[in-house]
Image (cartoon, rainbow, N blue to C red; front, side, top):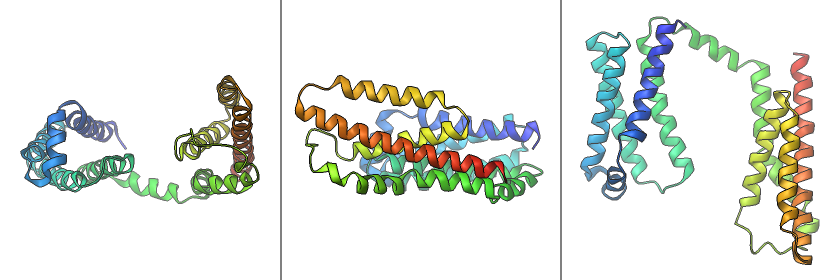
Length: 246
């Protein structure tokens, strides 16, 4: 891919971010969430994205007619996606899905506009190679499957601690994030940050130690943390060894 093609993609992404996060007021957001397709804001917002996309395409040296058609496609798809999102509850998964759909449209438009999208075929072929598939498998394993395994192992002690003062599912989410970071550090051959991460959590938990109830809860959380770290470290080392012989 030449620099002009990359510049065009970056311009489209900059236009999207400006339209969605810099030039959209909270009044527009509230109007879309309450009135859905009846809100004038959803049409103004989509029109703004079309104009920003058109400006980005023209700055990227695209001819006027293809740029105008591409901007129209971006505006219409943005309108449809935003109307659908306005009916969804305000959750992270819907925000991420919304952004993924918008960026997906931009990628498709960009791929159709650049002269030689052959690199996309090469990228698709690389993603289907054993190495990236193995890494993707590792990341999937350290999320929900490992959480279930740790919960089953920790059943022996879970009945002995009072978790009524803890946020619902917060421990599982923290564990997923920890394992994601640990696996990333192992695959990047950066083990020092793992020590800092473990030390920071240990200090945090023992800083809350005041009475017997707190001692049991602290030991329970630290046991789960050590188990989580150990499983992820072992998996990361196995993946690195497998990648080395591929």
